Length: 274
Image 1 (tube, rainbow, N blue to C red):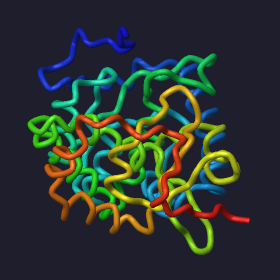
Image 2: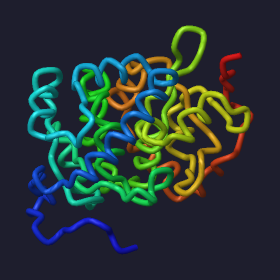
Image 3: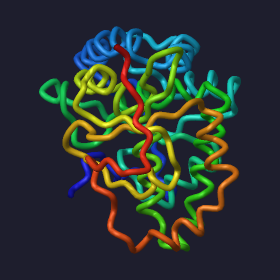
Image 4: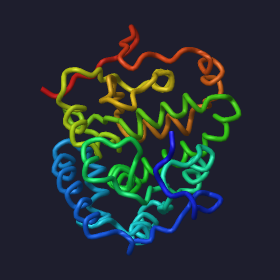
């Protein structure tokens, strides 16, 4: 697949300048439209930590300046944003995360892509991911995830590590009170999947189990058939920080992935709110 971004000016670590003045009035207007739509959904379906991060960042109805947002993140959790042209190689992605630098794509989707986007753009990356980096525990989890990349590459476990990111960073759900809330960036940047992940009776919702997550294949072109539900961000962080992934890689790296819609005998289903 040919990547969409302009990589011609990228540095060795794939960082670029944001060049905020190059965004057009039409692009800022599209950002505002996306922001208005998703903010309303996140207030209803999003985790409280997401809402707190949005408030702290003070996201306006125009494409954010990464340098200003980085100052907010740095004060909150020591993270910064690094502008990138689009998807970047895994080793550079992991290296940025391990240094508390979150890669955010600089380009914005076209109006025809309001509801479906093949590659992540600035709205997905910024609105979906950056607010939770204001949460200290989740911020520590993402750094621990990045630091795990080198061992995963050495052990042939990159596919398994990618599944953890997919299900617990992009498409994660968290218990909240007597119900569920969404925190994954892939959910919160999608108008349709935000409500679907919580309200629909079609997907499985399964209590988080590290090995189960890392063995489960996922869908990139449809709503998820399975969501994994964490009890807290502390649970997620401890799973990454306290666990030696190497035995998991050795046990399952060559095994077929579990189907995205499978429900196994050991799974613990989580009921959606009534």
